[in-house]
Image (cartoon, rainbow, N blue to C red; front, side, top):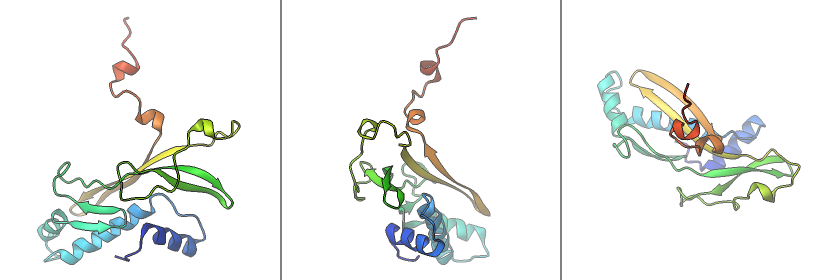
Length: 170
């Protein structure tokens, strides 16, 4: 839509608002990119079936990566690249630095991932963030938009609750 890179989008946001960029900015922008693309390709905007046909046929390269609902990995789901970052203290405050790009090799890591032991003992504000965006669509409206931030301890715990908390006999 704007042909901006993620960096340019963040810089424009900071310039126009005077505030640091937010993690969901790219996905919020991509939502509008895809919506405009769908409306441009729909044959008849007054016909819901035409809009649905354009949504299903979406194959768009957005600021957050390719968007395509072709049934892979799951029907009506589009996977975008996922990276991990760490907040690093800088001269102007804190900055989110991309440190892990295993699942998105086309994105460049800015710095290496640093373990907690490498940070100053007294500083306990270290966080690892995995960010994903969830957009649920209904033919007549946007159903839900939500950013999810996952705590690694929660994300890496055993899936089976009985492994976490074995049943007790009463």
